[in-house]
Image 1 (cartoon, rainbow, N blue to C red):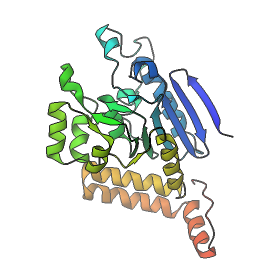
Image 2: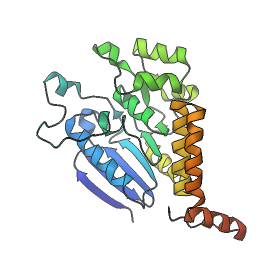
Image 3: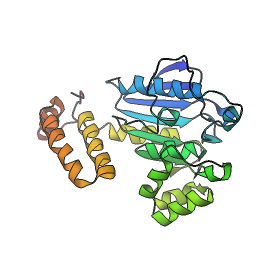
Length: 267
């Protein structure tokens, strides 16, 4: 039976075998991000990243209307503090504890509804995106006198053709899941209400690979996205040595020779 935890009422944290599922739990506020949920999300992510039994993370929202409506503009307008000034100084990992974080493990966004503003920026901070068919995406900040300051302006032109990215940035208009899939912004579109199950299923496929090899492959690919092939090549040399020294490397080669399913330990 799946283990369920609630480290904070604003976030529901589940462990499903080797998959950790984080649910933003403010459906009445369209899962908008305020200071309290930022802290709760950061705590949940750090718990799963430190758990050797969790190999892949899934991030989703409660309800079926919104994945995340971005920043809680009502609280911002009311002058609510971003983070408790009395709290110890800490790097929370950017907007929602997500967009400025360098995740060690693969992360999948399971988009259960509208992902607007910071919601789209959360998706672009993830490695893969699975969306319900009614989901929408967009950066409407310019229509609020703001701009997409959680890496949306930097990441969108890398995910979709530059001319399309500029149109979405300047008009603030949203696109539906089918269009997002066509543009390569997301990976899969699934029937309404099934994105979490589909994301967990995709995570389980990832978990069939060796955890260290998956993690290091992701690190090199991410480096090539941001720094180019030459810088990534330097990372490859170091990571290749680490992989070849791992127990999983020996187990993988033995399992192949013995025609059986490997038993990964992540070491």
